[in-house]
Length: 301
View 1 (cartoon, rainbow, N blue to C red):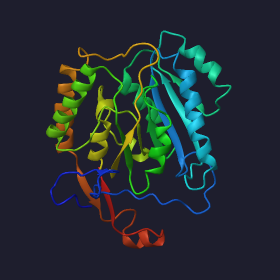
View 2 (view 1 turned 30 degrees about the horizontal axis):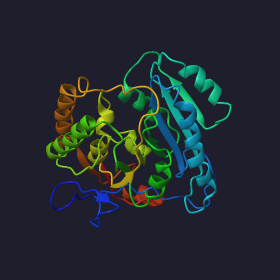
View 3 (view 1 turned 180 degrees about the horizontal axis):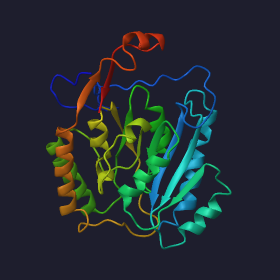
View 4 (view 1 turned 90 degrees about the vertical axis):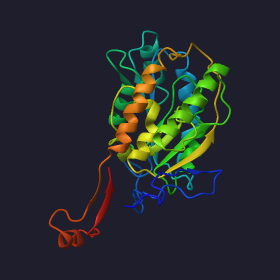
């Protein structure tokens, strides 16, 4: 596998005609695939939540209204989906609300963490529980629009990941300013061009999620970490809404020094990613040919 001649990863943007990153992971869709968990068109939506009980009924209703029709759309080829909602040690009515919602939404798979472990830990717990071949992420506070998942799902063709970028932020001016500068600094340090690393609206292959390094704060760097794994990435504009209930769990205090330290750590990880190509396996070219596989298999780690 060969990176771009410039040595830096490139991303495809639906408003940018430049080609995407050249690393590819090909997972062909089997002919006449039956709807089943783990099939190439089964989607796991991973949503970490802490004290968001008021948002959950609307969130599940909007997800069902978005994804259920895609199962009837031949062009979308969504064979099924599940919603993995991770209760990250909530102290409100979240457990009771999830129990009540399960009756109306059979796709719901709630997971409850014993203690508040943080958004990154809750997200990775969802990744481990996911049964789909594709994973989507959303925040539980309703600022991400579940309807955008249909757009990202349709845009995934030819890519390993589709990242949303918030076209019009519905946050305070201070948050927008901090986010804008954070994106610029992050891209400058990592040598990337991700428009909105903080946007949680994403879809990517589950095999990539299984290889992502896990650490506190990793949820802020999923885009860069996907590029580290050699993913082909597209960026698509998505909606952003004002928070209808509660207050944000993040402020300048818990987003400043800690994020800088995390950025330096991610920069180290990006430069230390091992790259290798498997030439033979399981008995060499003859055994591979007997299985109907190519003798040389390229992998990016």
